[in-house]
Image: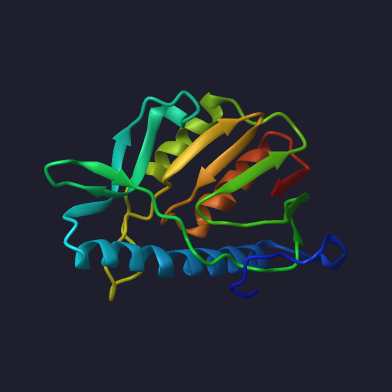
Length: 194
């Protein structure tokens, strides 16, 4: 996996089995994203933009789960506003397939702040997703003791055109794996990240 803006062709796809390769891959993607996100936060602070990263807000957006989002950075001066983080570097990798609990997870594209999830079965109901969502929108202690603490939360979760679109923000890979397991419990045999 490299830090370029393109992905390999589907003919170069490779398959692995088990949870460990998936978690390792997701951790690389998260680390790549968080390095840029932390620089984004630091740049705002150095520019004198008083504010806070990862602030939970209500939004008037029907596609957002529960109408909630976590702002990438909330400037808290006389004119409060949300600043969205757009990473400048994307990972480049050959599409992979990982099989977990009998379900194929095909990762064609992975941008940690814009993950599109497709499934071979109907997506779980809002009620089925509620516990997962509440768990991963709730701040938790992180493993980065020597760096500025992040909340380890999702930044947004949307339903759009029969698919999920998720900004995993600072959430750990376990949030992604938990979603895959929930999809598997709903009967999915194939999940794609595109």
